[in-house]
Image (cartoon, rainbow, N blue to C red; front, side, top):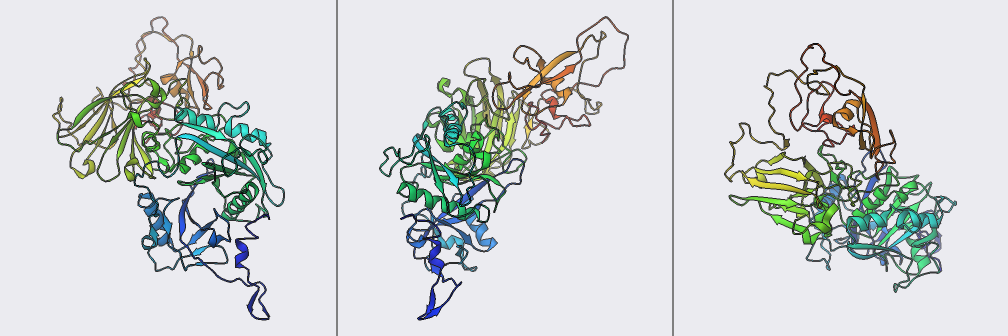
Length: 623
């Protein structure tokens, strides 16, 4: 018998009579939960350029409470304060979504299929750790290494709406089974250096190949008995889960580690490109987004238990050194992860170290290697965790972006030392992270009153060398109880990257953009320069920071010679070389302070410290 949501679970709400011989058409009876439910947190990804959606809370019902159907989630109907309380418990790491439970025994599931929570009840009192909770929090709720079995489900609704790509095309777009070289499988395997392998295949409950239902490698098709156009996001997802289980003859996830659903479009409860369940097996994609490698890796990252990665501006998604920020939305690019996420994923556990800079007299100098050249690291770490004692730890890494490594499509902070802080969990569980600094050679980042100790911990990129393989960053970490080789600064350090002192006096004229030495000869013909980046910079930026056009960048304003990741050779015509002597002219304004990237200048010519992409023009401006 084909079991559907409407025929099984939701049918429990239909009442046929209120008393013997009395018909009660149109009425519904209450469904009272008999068991606990598993707390589920949904992380939606915004549409490209859209507003950031908030986390959505659901609870996965027991099969007994869902009419014999497993994998059914119901929204939690509670006050705003109760929902915030539960979200805070998840975001702090006190509760693990996808594993810990909510005591709803005796609670009502209403006619809108929502779990009703009494408004006076504390969510912390109703929530509890799962009886099978694991002692080691880090990376243990789901698998992130080894052979990961994945399934893609192509969905058709009751009206025939389905995404038009064929199953074979979809298999290629997600798993690279045809001609597509950049996809979910290639991205995860490259970023992990093959610590995981994606295995796309339809399987039976026992794990044997299911050739009966597989329509292309790793793809099955299902038809749901409801319409996408008038049903909520949650109802659609539950209908898909029910249909897949009925077709394959076993519950989900069953033999799979991760299952992906592709729907034609979102019509109700929209604003998302895709969404995923944290520490769980399921993700859902609308429209073209199923074939965007960056989007796929972002959502599978949530399945892995990763939270979002915020940037220097403090916004949730703006760390563009990490795919858990706003990912690449194109069809030919992906990014890897920042140092905090790398630590949580455990892909580089043999190249992680933990330091405690709270120690009196602490100082250490480390040679870091990026994950881009992880196999060549020798004894050098790729991730350094700095303990704070309260869970909000810092993570330091070298964001190496070579021409051929897995990080080649990185979008921010190429070949800089990056410093990231997590909100909690010590990098061992779900927690929002924020990019704190990107350091070029000679720059420092100072953390005042580190972990409440009263000490200032300073992280300095002493040197960066990318002329060798592996490229390296020499980093020194000290606290202010360590004798300094130079005089202490007059002003207390601040939580921004500091630059070498400028030779210009404080009352020097404001520099104009771009800077140039006083000419001694008349200029001759202009020359063409270029930069290779995704977003078009201003011409003065190209002239100040670019290379002479030609060689590796032969195609003006095209991406063919800029590698992968949607990067383009942006050209500009720039002042040329020397000509014959010219008469004296008005002296030019002074040059900018050493270490201040040209793209950091605003319209008024004032250096604002550093630009968001730290020397990589992108139009994102200054912070």
